[in-house]
Figure (cartoon, rainbow, N blue to C red):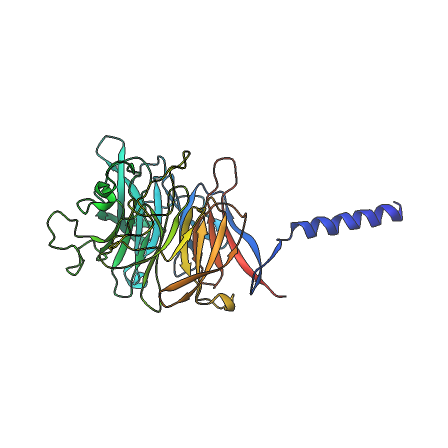
Length: 384
């Protein structure tokens, strides 16, 4: 074998090894790489971690999966309720009770069948975790909605007092005609709302519309289109949400008790395809304006508060994902103000969920469309 051949083969080997290494990305404060944690998932929607380090991942077609020590457990978790997996519906959020260590309660949101009609609504079920399965599963919230198989909302967040907040979308109700008569402006249903309940589904007596004739008592805020992320700030206790706009006009909102967020009366987007106007304007007295607007929209998705030490310069930031935009937006927070600082993780795929793992790293659930790979990815720091 010639020396020239050996040198060429060695060079090819080094090149192949180098190309297999994750690329290094630069941000304002940290260099990072993106590694694959788990593959073989179908439409991953939400992530949560058990105390033993296992990751729970929902798949929209109706399966709850376990990622254990870097490997996807083949068998789905038992005890998951039946879902209507159509359009944007299916098995959606997964969240642990704040006292999971003692009560073992897991919460799921899903598109619940309504009779034999093929229709569905947003529901929240909870079950007791035991031996890698869910037991004693029952609904704690079933939204009163109707409409197309989309805009189910379905994000969950517990506050420091143990109240559970639930987002419900407007179910793609048409934004035409009398905009103030739109279901998202009507307190008699749950369409386009964020709701507040006790962990067992009871209605808190201090909810803003308790006792108001014709109003659903679970409602905390209304006038939303499709809230796709929900987060309680761990230091201030403020509730934050991101919301899908129409064509343009995705929003980051500070959620206030009893407030009206204006959909579809006010907003920044336009009708799909035609580009024609929807709203009467971008502001109106008695309706809340967003803290941040994306125009064009990025297809906002999951959101998390970063408190870890692996990316120290990001500590105290909020990370918000984008589906169509295939990006991760980092916001700096100052009380009830948020400022877009930079865009991370571009072109890694459609980011459906964003979480900080127990290891202090950032995890992304990639929910690509048919024909493209889906995965759980992880952002890891790279020393300069």
